[in-house]
Length: 82
Image (cartoon, rainbow, N blue to C red; front, side):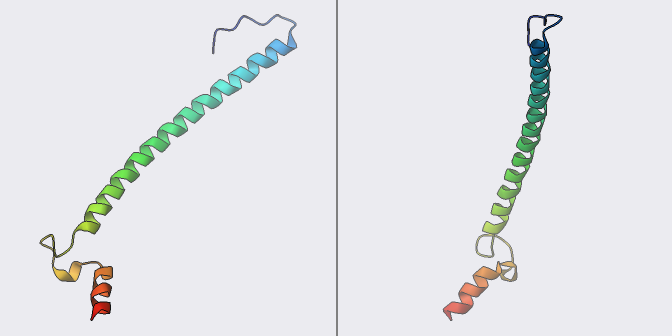
């Protein structure tokens, strides 16, 4: 908790203020944890997107993969052009 002057013994407003500050500090801690978890999830998703993009960019024309493993979209384009 921040360095606040002690509440006067009979000051209800001071006690309410201090309680509200404590609630907000707890909430801020929870939000920091949530943001940290989201940052971890974003990093994992970025890695997944990068892996999927690399996998999608591979085909029989630029790798040792057989033509039968090419995406269906490529086959559809070839079939339409005939």
